[in-house]
Length: 138
Image 1 (cartoon, helix red, strand yellow):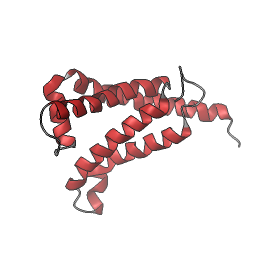
Image 2: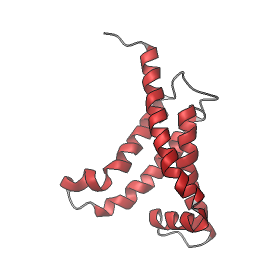
Image 3: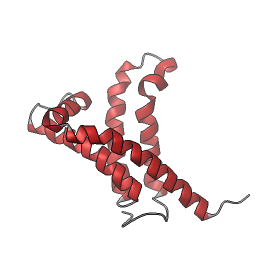
Image 4: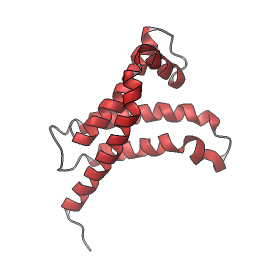
């Protein structure tokens, strides 16, 4: 059975809305958490950053990537920019989880989730948003 491009586009829409909605939920508390939350987020993900405005900026960028990227993913607008930002955020999240891995048996439990999402965002970056989108597909 041959699938039409409609099926592919519908599949991309379902994936974008589902994952994008989850990132709205993940990003919202970080975004509204304020300066202390942003700095803590950056220090957790990038502990080598100096405290202060640099950490706050990177933490805010991560929160915006999750919330704003989730929203753009749902809409399919600026799709590749959103996927790149979310992939970068997941790469940092994966790097923070990597130290907890003590062997192949607990890899999925400790570090699998951000790596799985990194793979999804890279794949979506190359696949594009599909025809069901709002706005530009950059």
